[in-house]
Image 1 (cartoon, rainbow, N blue to C red):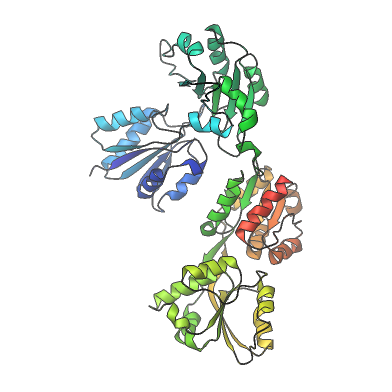
Image 2: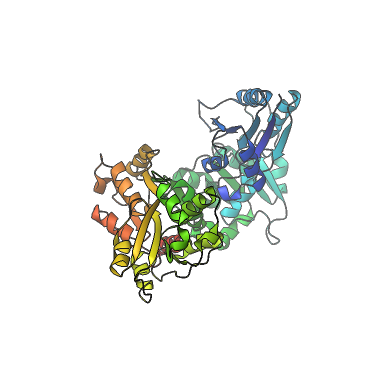
Length: 506
């Protein structure tokens, strides 16, 4: 019944620095034991049925599990035949106590695998624009702990050798002992004029960096209130930050942006925003559900060859249509000679993945754009299939019918309210922890307002910027009294993210 344990390095905080091997292990795991420094977004790789166990490991956290308790937990779970992922901040073998956990597993006869992570000793200085080596500044690097085991009688750090014998010194977990570290270095011969930098929450959007010298770095860090987790770098390479500081100069650096679209669709949007430096908070206010009945679509599919046009108005509509087509053991050949219209480039791309190249993609990605694009065509007597959301505007079918077409509107999905994180949403807004709220549909706006029905909407959103993907969503937001600050010229996710970045850059 013995299972297996993966000792996985979660990296320094930026989820983009997590390894592919780590992703594979999390997807396999029955149990995930994770600590404070592992980015919670990595848990999205877990199976829905995986058991998630938080063990803390935050400095000063009285409720955190002890190392002995963690060791025992890993062994107990593995002995029941489960695959256990131990997700640890940074790299498990760089001051991560992974070696100790591996020893305990070895003694218990449990197979284990070590999955290295990008250590904060390397990543955090890089994100602060500080290379640890440079041919003009430093040829040697030492990584040291800033928090030795308090039970030790004497330090294992040879201060008299590292203080002056190494070009660049990197101290992990050194925020609480910063005065002692500086005192040791100065007392063993390092010059008080040596450049030094303290980086707090490195590689994350809230990264904060203070630079100075050994003479004043303690006072500077204390004045800024920099606590753990922090990395201290000592050496001439710190001088290069002025030229190499790339991360903190991105347009959305330090901005916390709320994404309200469905969890399944939020990923690409979040990646684009994070690529510009934002911290993304995903609180899906809608979910995509099947229609109340598949019967209308099933009947339409039976007579699919009779339609002259099929118009898709969303990616969701395309996916639902082809999913049901496969369910009925049919394929795209059933579309026959019908002309295909896609409301926008994203819908067209989705059709392309189903081996359908649309005949028409309007210049403006909304119903009005489709109406304009179809004007050159004689629609008198034409049969048009419109698979779309259960609730949608009637502008398009009414216009087509006025032009003599027979329009069959078939519901293929529903947009329903998601209340899973309403309290989190309220607390973030009340605590002024959101800089921008993004809306990608009118339903996300409506559910946002309904979720805050017990609050003063204007007061709780004071100082928060609002971004809408297009004019219909914008009109809905303004109807509720929200001031819309950002709307892209084209109504796609990439242009939406670019418009947000341009707004804050300006």
